[in-house]
View 1 (tube, rainbow, N blue to C red):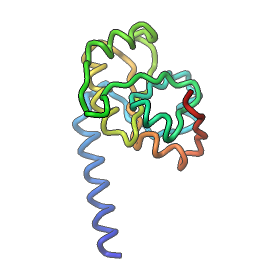
View 2 (view 1 turned 90 degrees about the vertical axis):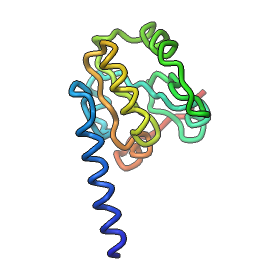
View 3 (view 1 turned 180 degrees about the horizontal axis):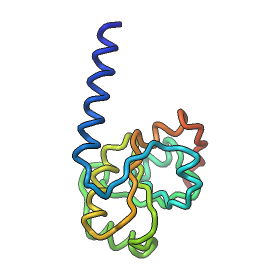
Length: 137
């Protein structure tokens, strides 16, 4: 029991540090129905394999940033994203747990996106939030 408490404390501290180092203009939010109904465009940056394994948030734009080898082409991603989303649109970036999405959120703010939200806890938090995922086609 004591080990669980220590692990929980370490997790909370790590989350606080992650939020503290986020770019000032990157909003942090957990996945909620309120967020999804706020007019925000969800950008799912996971891989196709991940989309197929878990499903996706209905209406999300699936656009891989990091491939399965953890490699990426930031400029190619940005070009694809700008074809679908205006830099002034409200967007929420989601990955599996929130780590990759935080990196991408910071990158997008640096590249001129003005209303970026990082989904803390990622897609794995969907069940806890009561968000039903749909199959990826």
